[in-house]
Structure formats: structure tokens, C-alpha cells
Length: 426
Image (cartoon, rainbow, N blue to C red; front, side, top):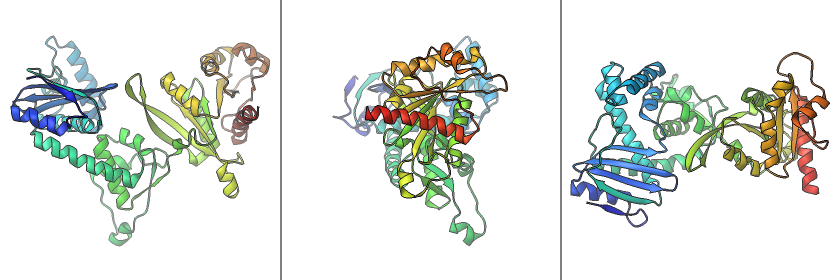
């Protein structure tokens, strides 16, 4: 049987039911721009599902859940590569005694449910069912009833709507709060899943980041966060990075992530937040770590004076240097100005800034400031050496920066904003 069509004409639950009623074996492939999903059947039962790009591979799922350690996974992957018959990861873990069959089957069930739930959220796409096609990378084939999978998918959709209605956005930053329940009961008991989430709540990481780090799949992690929020144990603040493009914002870029982060932490102090921005790059979803903070209008980091100062606060942010250039270009279009941090310990260290400088120049008429800093004690390079090594022209501002001195860092940001204001006027 060959079944094909559009998800706009046939809903996914109806397609799954049709395959089930025919009691066929094979693979249902669903495609839309940049994404592919595959659901495998045997005699009308769902036995496996996967997506590309895959959000959480089986091995990583087991590590994050605390079932196996990173060392065990590495050893199993090495054994898998050495296996002459292409042994599957789950089989290798079973044979090595690292995991029991019941635990592995449960992980496979969760992977199937998570994948199919993702497909339920696709508003459009093309589908095709091919008979007698089996998965090439299965570990253990479980059998899930189609009705169970459909009911689970519909239940998750309803719960996701409630979660988003209450939390507002996965880019909000949660903070622990004191609940009246604790006062009334005198104690507090958290489940293992709640502990997995709570230990990552530090007042800086956004919900996306916590869900990525807590070891639970995204849906279960979000449910736990919602439960903590509903019980009054967690509050959430507005997402900082939503301000990029909506207000004055300065992008900080340099060859060494650690010093970029020190720059922002010095400037914003306790207002620094870690957020995980999801972008579609080259037809795949990429998680991009963002560190951001608000610099008050007075630039001193002490909160400013009244409503007028708050209205002029500046968003300062940086992105991991390993992030794709496409992600940087998108952020560039939303930024008011740029700060290029340059390690000026010596000429060789300074040369690593050339790539960042070329990137900004390719953006066109973008206001930017070069901020040389010293990461180690030594003789500071002169401005003439910095200009010559980086190939700067006389119009490029070079503002020396002491990374751990707030006034110095604030002066760099103000210099970048002055350039942006001059461009806007001219």
C-alpha cells in the first residue's frame, strides 16, 4: 500500500488510524521544510519513531536521565563502532550490563512519544507511507497502540497550551520563591524530577536553558516547571533577549567567550541572565546560548533614577563564539551597535580579533567600537600597535577596557551608543 498526501488535507491522527486499520508494516515519512519525521509500524502497531534533526538521541536521553554516565556512553559508542555486525547502542549497553531491558524499553517508548508529539505540532507538510520498510537504527522494537499514541499526543497539546498560557514564554527566567504552603506544612518534599529542575534554577538561566540541562525531555521538564510555578515555589520574570531589536541593544563579540561574559557580568552584575535562543539555520534547528543583561541609563549599574532612566536602559548581550555566523548576522540586524573585544596581551593575541573585525565590516555601515583589554599582567600595547595590527582606519574608535572595572566597561558601551546615535542623526 502506498499512501501519500498533505497534512493540510489529512490530519496526522487520521493517517495513523488508517495505517493501523490496514494492519500494515512499514514507515510513515513526514516532511516539511528543514525537518523530517519517520514513524515505523509492524502489523499496525507503532514500533519506532525518529526525527531529523533529532532533539535528543537515545544515548544522550539515557545520560540526562541519570540511567548511565557519560563514561559508560562513550565506552558503548566505542564498542558500537568496533562491532563488525553494526550492533545497536541499546544492545551494547545491555550486553555490557550498563542497563536493564525494562529501562531501555521505557526510554525507547518515551522517544517514540516525544517524536510523534513533535509531529502533532506541524501545521503543514507532506506524508508518504511505504510498506515493508523497517528502521535501520532501532535498539528494541516495542509495540505501542495507535490510540494510546494519539491520546498521549492530544493530551500533551492541551497541556502545552496551559503551560504557555501560565508561563508565557520559555525564555522567561525562573526564580525560587517562598510559598505559603511551606509555612502551613512546615516542610517541603520534592520529587526526583522536581529536584532535577530546581537545582538548575539560579535566577540567571531561562526556562529553555534549564529544560536543556535538567535531564528530562522538554515536555516533562516544562510540566515540572509549571507545577513548581503553580504551587508558588517559582516566579518568572520577563525574557531579557526579547528586548533585542525593540530597544537600544549592544552586541559584544570577541574570540574568547570567557572574557565576553566577564565584560557583561561586570556591567550588569546580578541582572545577567543566561538564555537559550532556538534558531533555524541551514534547515536545522540550532540552540544558541545567549548571555544578556540590562545596563541602566546612568551606566553605573545601580538601577538609575525613576521611570525615565528605566525607559532608556540598554540591553547588552553576547553569543557563544561557536554559534553559526548566520545566527550572528540575524542578531546584527537587530543590534544598535557592536563592541569588539580584543585581547591585547601581545600582537599574536591581538590578531585573533581580525576575524571578528572582518565579520562586522561585511555587515555594512554598522557602528562598532574596538575595546582592547589585558587578560594577563604585562606591558600594554600602544594604540598605534593596535591600529596597525588590526588594520583599522583613523575613524574607528579604540576604547581601552579593564574587564573587571564597571566604569571602564560602561565607557566602552557608551562609546558604541554614541556612534549609533550619531549614525541615526546623520
